Image (cartoon, rainbow, N blue to C red; front, side, top):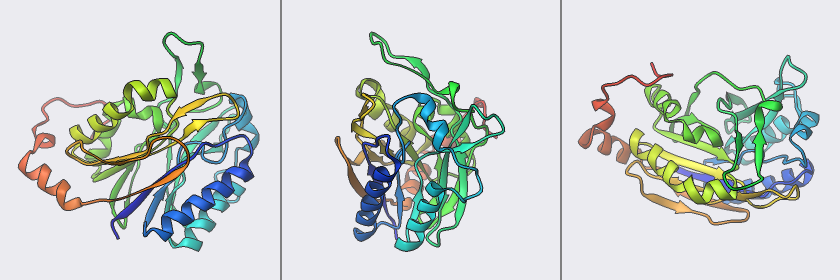
Length: 276
């Protein structure tokens, strides 16, 4: 019961096509013995323009087709699912939340994390730019949830660059952290592996990332390289590009051993913003 899966996709602007691909890959993860699977950020939709996401946003009541899909697949496969991200409506009709929903193996929603750090950047030496705050409203709550494979913290893509969030997850008992993502090809090449390994090392926890990887209809290129990194910073398994399933095992005894013999997390002396 310690097998987990990271699902990698190259999603496009047609939700039904993306859901069919997600269904296929979730089935593969379950057939391989995973008890929990993580979908990538924007798994169900990557529009042609940033504002396109407003057209598929759902009410946060579980009734929309994207939420129904996640609940149905979890129930059908007997699989815990971390639902990448989907857009959920807010009181501001021009902005939505980028929400990561967790469903248990009975199809019940047991957690929701809204992306805190929004990707408002212009890439160096490039015309590529993103302004997520135009259409997304940032979240403000740190979320952990108990699962059959330990206490799991939730983070999304750009969050990876903000170590104070991961300290807050650690202080709430996280033994491992999942990261649905859609890193750009340029930033992924430069920073993806080192940031994943840094967050795992400094918090002495597993990091499981599920990424978008490949070329998208809207012209975007994402880095892929979904990975599991152990609490010593070793890459246990990693995909390259294109859709696929990474299956790996968590060993929480290793987490306990490392935190006991090399108690760096207990040696902290300076408070980190956002921690308790």
